Image (cartoon, rainbow, N blue to C red; front, top):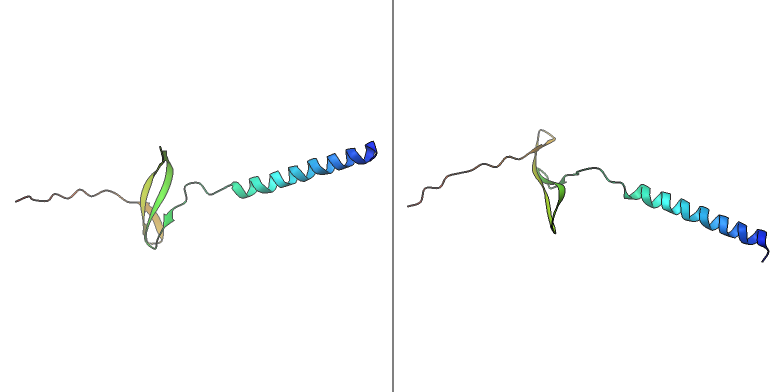
Length: 78
């Protein structure tokens, strides 16, 4: 193999690695904070606490996702 053919081979190899890198990085981008959902209730992941996923519970009202609010109920003990 001549020096010119070796340089051509290396140049093509580097270009192919760069193209693959661009394609892979384009696929890795995701929508920030997507809602993991059923029909009307979902969970918006926001981070990690150790191995546990943290986030916000969401509900769908009139087609839009809004944060769910905790409702504390008192139970009378007898």
